[in-house]
Length: 180
Image (cartoon, rainbow, N blue to C red):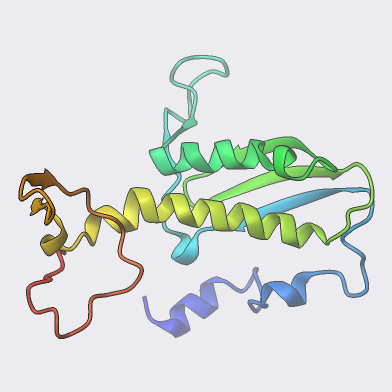
């Protein structure tokens, strides 16, 4: 789909604004209040799971539409409900997972020292760490880090567990080829 067709079909949504421009100017996000949070995956990739079931199924039946969360989706759910453990002034009221986004309701019970955005930043960082562990890291494992190494002090072969690389290998490391 070209950009012009896309623009004509999204007339109802209006222009996209940066997230900071969608926030209420002058609002203090440390106050006691209930907040409705929506977070979307980059590129709206369906990383959290998939919707299964039939739309014509009766409510309560096994065929009722529901989301089957992926391993990453389950970790995101666990992190969301753990928010109150890291920030005792925040109470988690609800969470609704979708394949490419989530909706959550948080209740700030007492004034926070730092804005709610700082708590959400920690949540996102944890989710990104899980993403790297489950999705990004296994697909980009360097071949040279897999296998056995020799212990220099004893001369015995030891199994070496590969660790996620902090950055791509230096170009001089010609033996380090990346799996696609």
